[in-house]
Length: 323
Image (cartoon, helix red, strand yellow):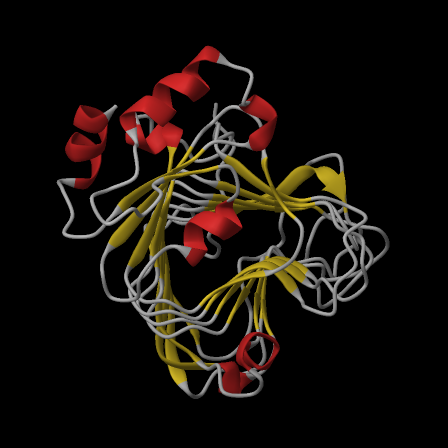
C-alpha cells in the first residue's frame, strides 16, 4: 500500500491519512490498514473512518494527502468546507493506476435526510487543493442543497472525478458543480447523468457558473479549463443545458472547453444549446480541440463564445453520422 502511494503521488512532505468507511470495519483489510497506518511519532492518528475527521487533521500548506478507500460510499452528514490550502484527496482507483471518467470505486455521498442550511456537500475554498479518482454524489433533497460540489478556491485541480446530483431535477439553478473559483482545472471528468431525466423544460445544468452562490458575491470564475471532459443530460425540454453561465460578470479573462463531449440522451428532449450563456464580454470563451455535441441543436449560440474545434461539417460542430 505504501509503495502504491509513493508511486501515485511521488512522495509528499506532508502527512498521509487513510479513510475507510465505518461500515467496512468488519473486513480483514480494515485491520491490515490499521496496522500499516499507525499514529506517528507525535501521536497524530493517520487512520480514520470519516472524511470529515480526516480533513480536520490536515494542516494548511503542508501538502497533506487523504487516501479514500473504494468499497462502500463515504457518507457525509453536513457540508464539508475545505478552507485549508494544498490538501490532496485521492481515491483508491487512482491510487492503483486506474483512470476512469466515471464509475469510480471511491464515492463520497450526501445521503437524503440530512437537514442543512448550507448549499453543498463539498465546498472548496482553499488554494491549490487537488482531487483525483473520486465520484461526488448528492442524494439529499433538502431545498438548501443547490450543488454536489461548490468550487470557490484558487488553482484547484480535479482529475478523473465524476460529479452527480440526483435531486431537484426541476430547477434552473441546481447543478452537479457550482463554479466560482479562480483558475480551476478539470481533467478527464464527467458532469451530470444520462439516467436521471430533467423534470420539465428546465435548464438544470450539470455545471452552473455562478460565483455568488459559492463565495457570497465575490466568486468570479477566472482562467478555467475543462480538458477531455464529459457533460451528460437527459433533457426535459429544449431549455435544458449542460453548462449554464448565470451572468457575464461570473467569468473573467479566460475559459476553455478542450476536447469535451456534450451528450444528451436520445431518449430525452433535444437541448437548443449545450452551453447556455448571456453575451460574453469579460472573458475569452473558447470551445476547442475535438469538442462536439450529440442530440443537441448547437453547442452554443451566445455572442462571445468562439469555436476552435476540428470542423465536422462546414456549418456546425455536431457529430457526423457514420456510414
